[in-house]
Length: 304
Image (cartoon, rainbow, N blue to C red; front, side, top):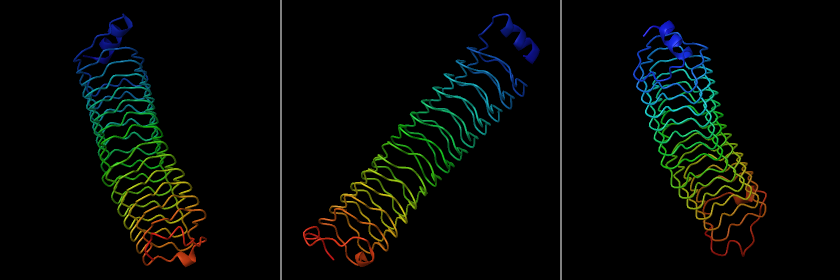
């Protein structure tokens, strides 16, 4: 269908364009509110700065489409193919992207607050400074994605894939990442306050200069993790595995390290003021270089 014909039908009140072929069409800055574009072919279409609020693009093909700065709040994009699409700066609050294909897409600075991306594929996507606060991200594939400075506070993150993801300086406040494989992940400078990492695998993870106030790492594996200058005030590291971890200069004020395994951990310059080390395994640690001298009672069940 020609663009002029399509827009003329829309202006006449027609809203159902199921399966329409608009591949390569220039629809930049158009207003298409509450339009039905399910199964539409929009490959390579230019929809930048378009208004698509409350429209239905479920199962539409938007491969390589330009949706930069488009307004798509409460838009239906379930099972849509947005592979390699440009969604930079798009406004997609409360949109539905269940099972959507977004691999290799650019969602930098995109606002997806409270959106539903359950089972979406974001493999290799550019997600720098994305807003995913309160979003449903259960079972999302984030493998090899760049989430630098992204905001995921309060998001649902059950059964997500995070292989080789860049989460540096992200906001992961008040999220549940318990029993998650985060091996080797980059969380440097991230905000992790009030989050749950209970039982997670953080082997060789980079947690340098992170803020983890009141975070729960009970039973987590932090073997060889880098926690240099990390702020773990009131964090729960009970029974955590911190063998060979680098905690140089870390702030562990009031942290609960009861029963934690700190064998060969580097604690040089760490602040352990009022930290609970009862029953902690402290073999080959350098506690003498910390700001805390544990009492005999606290270490009565530990191994030094």
